[in-house]
Length: 158
Length: 158
DNA sequence: TATTGTTATACTCTATAACTATA
DNA sequence: TATAGTTATAGAGTATAACAATA
Image (cartoon, rainbow over all chains, first blue to last red; front, top):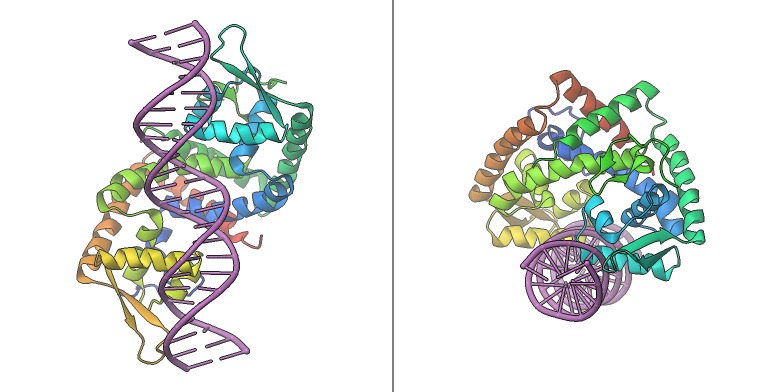
């Protein structure tokens, strides 16, 4: 029952996890632990933002004429959930929603001055965070890792 | 406000996501979409297992003398949540909990014959899933990707 | 009749405190 | 007094159906 390779590295708890070490999904999850923790410590906690909220602020920083519809498509969350998130960010006066004149069903979502300032700040902070995270990798390794992850991500037809 | 690189690849919803494309965490999340979907379609749905339950079955397949304590340490979930998961799997008669004779506080968690059969089946299925997922990568790329992800995962001191 | 966005709701996951039984 | 495991509970995150307003 126990693994035939007793010198494999083991999990905390000293359990053989060789059955998972062959799975990409497991490695992705393991690699996500430090990135998620770093995000929480460096950005999430201080600015009271979760990953989705962070992403929304970043998208608003680089795009005009953003609507909830386009956002929910882009980040792949159901419209009702996005409504709640936008409510939250609007209540904090980080963004504002205005009705389109051309089509009154549509809303335009824009950063407020405070939202813009915060978005710029966390954008810069994310660069620092990234340097820390990737300090163990050479620049070549880093480029390779990103390219390989993109190749996996493209496999989106499932 | 809009990105200075208008020919960058864009997100569904046609949004510029250049601010996220520089972040490892974002690439990990994007790459996790197909792996998670594939897991759900090939294993999760048919066997009614989530990722944690799958991991637990795999750990039980390769380890003896497993206790809830060791499991909760290994997969890093709070003990109360593990109790609920083990309850669920025990009710399905995939595993059994027995009191240790040496220390009656401790439980030993073991696969039942059905649990063992299922664990072996999903272990083999996970190999097939993996082939599909990595079919876009050469063997060298695949090895490189795993090594780079391990390097990132080691960065666990955060 | 279709689309944008909202409300209401339910289900899962995750996190914490308080408890029991054993040592 | 400390440890293994449980109970109860609260909070996030996620998903779906039904609705209002507009086209």
